[in-house]
Image (tube, rainbow, N blue to C red; front, side):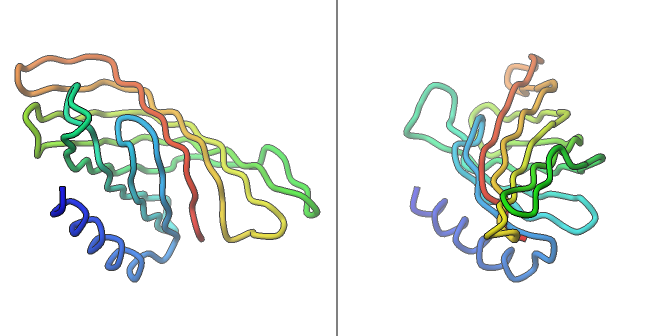
Length: 152
């Protein structure tokens, strides 16, 4: 577990310096905790910790690459908050585990920016797709979600 904390610390330091579009933290499923980096072109790279099967004490590293294909404003008020939506597609993988897996997914999310802190957004996201498990080779539906904070 110690090497995972060191790895995530290095990723945070290097990624924060390289991220031009934004960076943030998230929690959800299947990754219970992670960091993400967003480019101005709509690409998002995420690195998170995913539990190994039913064992809550063992974690693996999951990596995700998403592309935001559409976004728009749901509600806008300069005095209180702006609420935006976004939709896209992506793929995630967790290969350094006992049962390696990848998934392709569509995603839909809402993000709120408050008037007093326009550079920070709170978001909630739903992911729906297909998971491929390599040992044994099977497929199953994938459902994931994230909630978090993005600094732009």
